[in-house]
Image 1 (cartoon, one colour):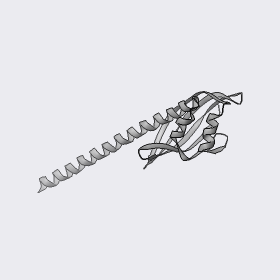
Image 2 (cartoon, rainbow, N blue to C red):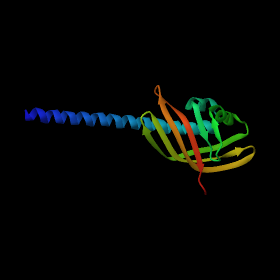
Image 3 (cartoon, helix red, strand yellow):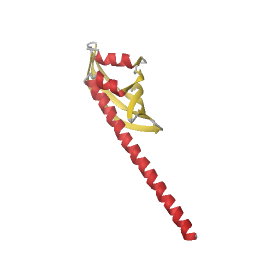
Image 4 (spheres, rainbow, N blue to C red):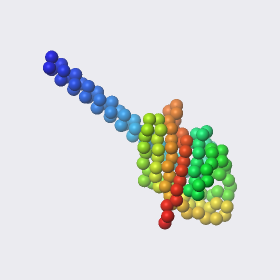
Length: 150
């Protein structure tokens, strides 16, 4: 009887470890996917690829810029299409992903350079992107950026 109890406890423990390991591996895979999506987002901005960004952001998307300007999905995409918006580089680093059920928050640092309406810009800041998983795909529902003083 005692051997059976010990075996049951050991089997339960091994099952718990296996299940936890699977959850960690899945979380790691999802984290990697989100970090790739963040880099694709930046590449799409530099290339002014509104179609790629359209696929990444939700129909309910809300964007809050460093200057406090708030835009919805259509306004955000229209800004990307604006011929006076000429980004040269957009880099992100120091990213961290925080999960809560089917939602993920990605925070990090960014550096963007280019010209807008003929005037150069060189911004360094922090961003927070809120993503949700729907039907196996991640979509960004909200983005916020803040400048960091140099």
